Image (cartoon, rainbow, N blue to C red; front, side):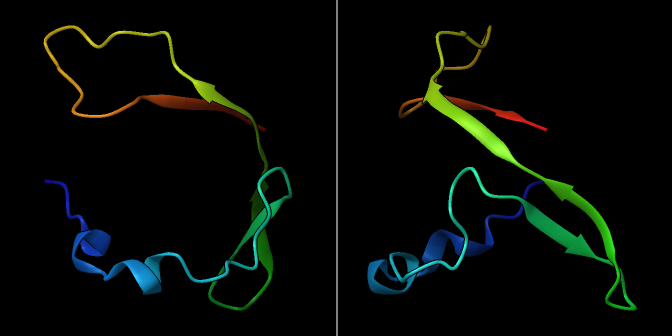
Length: 66
């Protein structure tokens, strides 16, 4: 089951400034506040891949994550 929690958010709130920059490391903390893991997304580009049996209503994008 997929829940799209942000689907009903008005555009001004969705477009608000985000403190995260694409290409910078994003950290995930555990319940105690210690950093549990960090991920960096890079090389955002339009995907050339097709999904068999699925017609995407928009553009499909992909990025590398390390």
